[in-house]
Amino acid sequence: MSQPGEIWVERSACWSSSHDSPAPCDRSICARGIEPMQEAAKNILLVLVTLFPIVDPLGGSPFFLALTREYSPEARKALSWRIAVNSFFLLVVTYFVGTYVLAFFGISLPVVQIGGGLIVIATGWALLKQRDDEKQDVQKTVQPEDTIRRAFYPLTMPLTVGPASISAAITLGANAAHHHAYHPLTILAALIGLALIAISILLCYGFADRLARILGATGMLVITQLSSFLLVCIGVQIAWNGIKALLESLTLHIG
Image (cartoon, rainbow, N blue to C red; front, side, top):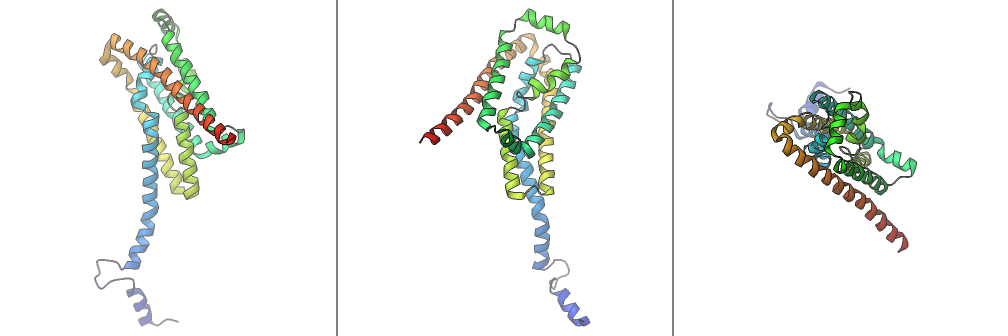
């Protein structure tokens, strides 16, 4: 059994002569407790820095306006809420299980890029070819339940969370699983980062109608046509990225 003097020596070894500051051994314990929090903060920033420029809700708001031109402001706000929720769950599923789902079905990321690119091209082309009288007819016949049908396709997938966002989320999830094996703090950090992305989508899409009021009818027509053309260009670029990756893999196999 330890004597009182020995116990005092053991305790005093962890404290300096000053009562205000802990000894190095106590600092190492504090550092080990801070390190997981620092890693969690790094993971949140990594998710935001990687996905926010790709999702680009600010740049996507004109596309959202172009595709919801016939909706009332109330329906547009409800739609932006649904898109934000859909985007959050889609990114969460992609982040945590995307790699396993694609491997299960034998689908590669370049194939996802090609398919998503073709959908974006078709959507942009349809907007370019749509006449003003057709838009007015749609505006007269649109029903509130249409917001539910269009919330996921095409507004969430692929226009908001497209192939590039899915590829980035899959890469982030695979990297997190490799380095941290889905530690609880890692999971929480990923959920917080993805929730912040969804909130940014909600804010940018929810207040897109104010942009329409500021620009007026002529300005909105210009943005609509330009956004439709850019959609076609973005779809071509996404599809080309997938085709180029497939061609590169083909040359590697042949070589």
